Image (tube, rainbow, N blue to C red; front, side, top):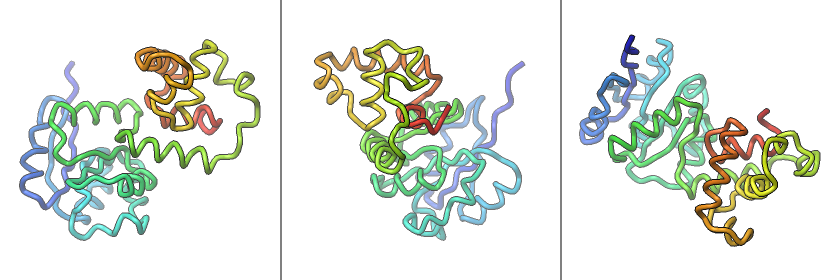
Length: 215
């Protein structure tokens, strides 16, 4: 039996964005239009789970005010901006957004982002991810046990552990490859195996696992 298309609220007062986002309409998604912050509040009260949110929607509090958390709770909110920045993305994700991307992301890529979120992932660009991982490293207490004794390392090879440690601290694939004297392709292969073994879907989840925040 085919799964019914899931309603997704597309919040924007920009006619160009609304037309672009509607191209997501398929067997998976059923677009609904909203144009105000009140529409998002009403959507949340209807127990709907999905929304695309124009970061420049009129009436939204400034992102730096951290006033969006109650709206994002228990929702899958993908924040999209025509002028994306690391700072704005950082504020959005810190308040519970499930992802942050460019508002004119092509339809195929946008659908991939939503599927990533549906499977428990968080979507960010590389620069924003590095900022988040750096924040994780700065704010969390030191790992209680040495890397080689931590529970998360049990299923990993020694090389996978070395790659995971560095990825969890915000190192890029290039930096990891240079530090370990291996190719970036090998780094990606180790990360792919590590994600599967630890049942995580992205580097942010990996960082939380490594630091003992996620089990």
